[in-house]
Length: 244
Ligand code: GLC
Ligand code: MG
Image 1 (cartoon, protein in one colour):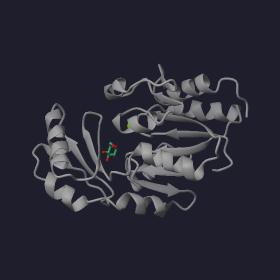
Image 2 (tube, protein in one colour):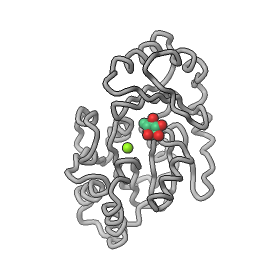
Image 3 (cartoon, helix red, strand yellow):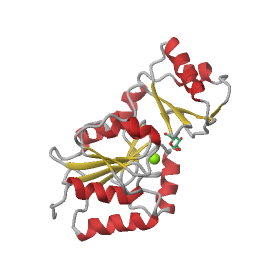
């Protein structure tokens, strides 16, 4: 990936994935222009769930796959986990304490995950006060963590050193060309941090309302188009004349 001059760093569900025609047209657009960008997928899904989506939607395999809301990083071609990142984020991670403090909060359902890299809950819609209750329980007990609420439904409790933004920063620092040109793309609350890093970024037209509150920065583009069409729109906006 160090040789790539361009990178597409994108969320999957409801960003790259959502409109199969738009998806096809985005990759045709790259081919026609000989862009051949490096690909980094940044998803809330766990590894196997991300692979099912990649297969189902026939997505190209990325160079790097960041899963579980930025708590785990895997490298092509063998999908080995990035051990340095795993060790760094787990140093201050207390999943058992978090579980025992949160498991009896009413109206939340713990998501079934194959690991404890994060603790995630689904909150019944229309109950934002429950989200506040989870967060204040963790704060009161001084639990180091990174709290992410998205789509009016998902609560992800992550190691404090992790999250999509921090994971993307790490990957760019360690594995990208120094002057790489990139585009970040997302649609929901768990994308907010990576879209705020100060790099060219696009909020897709079909984004969740929670992203309308995201403070603007000069490189943040709010697309009219939906899903992969929004990525193409933003690519033309940021890199209009570049051929190769
Ligand atoms: C994806 C994941 C889910 C997570 C959510 C928000 O839907 O499957 O576990 O809570 O993203 O990050
Ligand atoms: Mg999404």
